[in-house]
Image (cartoon, rainbow, N blue to C red; front, top):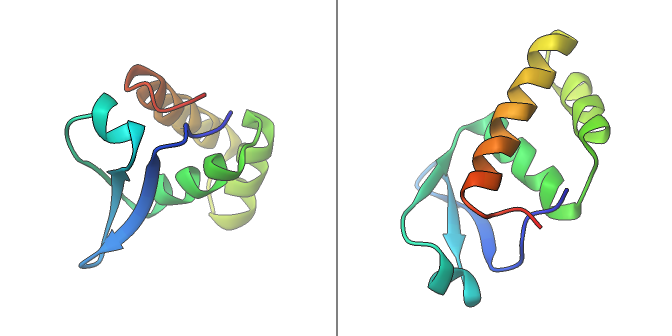
Length: 87
């Protein structure tokens, strides 16, 4: 899984904001604000990773059980797919 080109994560006034650039500006209207865990997911997905790699990274970074982590990843990835932000 990987974030499509045309979107960048930026910190603006203490908030994590996804900013469309280039072609992304034409395909997306709106603002995406992410909490710290969402920004963690985004940074990993910018590089490209499998669900298993993302799960391993999340479990190493945060104190969370595997089932909750897996469910959170599925929900986040599902929203990105709905918005057309994943390759």
